Amino acid sequence: MQRRAFLSASLSPIALAACGGGSDDPAPAPAPAPAPAPSPAPAPATPQARATDAMKRAVSYMDEVVSYRGGYVWSYSPDLTQTFGEMEAKRTMCWIQPPGTPSVGHIFLDAYHATGDERFYQAAERTALAVVAAQHASGGWNYIHDFAGEDSLKHWYETIGRNGWRLEEFQNYYGNATFDDAGTAVASQLMLRMWLEKKDPRFEAPLNKAIEFIRSAQFGPELGIANGGWPQRFPHYAGAKSSMPAPNPEQRPAGAGYGMEDGDYTLHLTFNDDVMGENIKFLTLCVMTLGRTDLVDNITRAMECMRALQNPGAQAGWSLQHLSRETNGRPAGAPAGARTYEPRSLATHTTQTNIQQLFNYFTLTGDRKFLARIPEAIAWLKSVPLPADAVQKNPQLGGGRTHPTFVELVTNEPLYVHRYGSNINNGAYYFDKDITNTISHYSAGRAVNIASLESRHAQLAGMSDADVAAMVARSPLKATAPGQLPKYFGIREVDFPDLFTGAKMTTPVVPESEVSQLIDELGSKNYWTSPVPEIVNPFRGPGPATPYTGTAYRSKHVGDVYDTSPYPADAPPEIEPYVKRDKPQFIVTSEVIRRLGRLIAFVAPVA
Image (cartoon, rainbow, N blue to C red; front, side):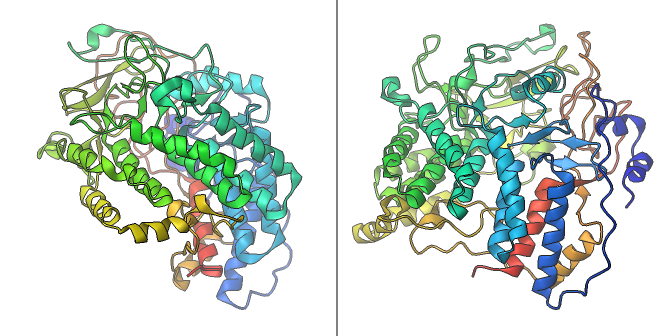
């Protein structure tokens, strides 16, 4: 498919602009044309050799043509003039947040492990050095990094970030690092793998900084019940937002809640996106590979913190975040609100995740206290299903969703999030108990597998003391000598069961027919394209504050043309100038990782 010709032919002017053209930044120069291909070499003789050859061509193209100084964002137009992370990105930027630069580094290193070919290690090394360059002085990572410098990054926040209505975490430059979205965790894991691979000293100091960042950010005993938890961002930025504007309040229904109910959420103890689980996992990797038994205390305090913060009484769940200290008369440990579409509540999906993590912590330690209150949490989940007619009232609650995302404290009734207006300057979020017309970008419902939770609990609770002792003897926290990491990190997420002595992280079976298709799709151009998940409106200045009383944007990913939030091209607002179109073909980083993972599993499977 043609590159620019495809976009020009298939997108309307507004949708074409939405893909990144028209930004106030100078348009980046098109990527240089690849050098003429040498005379074709004889085709590799075996399917494994063909797959390896395809991997090398794809990785070389990503490294030499697509990357910027070894860094990656989430998607690229084939001519590289349009680059997106979670929002529109400058060409000089890299995304740390998965599936960004560290995720690409992991799959490149996996390719090296599969083949032993140094070209793959060179690509992994260059990408890992980009991650090193992006490391904050404190030792963690922000969502994004700009190789053009902090002034360029601040400009991005002041323009594109500031006007992303639904992406409040990108609306302000804080100049610190975050645990959100596993960015710091995945980057830290890459530093660990690169150091262990060849003991290259360029990765030792960044690894040690990452470890100390996680230790320094962890709440200490002086915070009581918050001891062992982590904030959303660190070091704390004194100018962090504690409230959001609520323009045109007459459009908000009477009695609806709104705003940042508990102020600056970057200080809250955070479970959202499994912050605690990710940090515990990384520290566990360091214990088992580096012999860092001093980290067991940090791990133990974190495990205990999760257990301690389970809500008391019948509502025995967890919130996305909890207060790390007394705030406005509410005690430390209380469930807390965060962004304006994350009300103070209990969260069903977070509760499911924390139950699963407590299962892991029991297997790591053998301590039955981690199982003790799980039946209460499951009983609470059983008490708050979606109503039987949820899908009829709100089609967004289909797709296997079983529970409301948020449940109100005390009343145990669902809370649903809505918005009015058309952009950040004339609109706002609010929450109430109306199940209809919820926002689309943050699901009002979640799939909770109660049967699976009950089965796993029964299995673990029924173990004999002898079986528990045998299990714990294999725990990575009990390692007496440095061990090895799993061979691959990019094919699927490495989890606690993969870290036990004798565990084998197997790869999926990939049929030769699929490999042939992947090679054919790569072709001679040496890159894959896929439908890009989302496109964006280019920054064109602040949106109008004039009230918008229509409903075109209330359940869409994007507002009016001033909103820089990403949205799917095939599901735009049903209002001019938006036009529904097929998703354009881009180089999509997550799809490159997936395809390389399939080829790796074919070339060097672990069975």
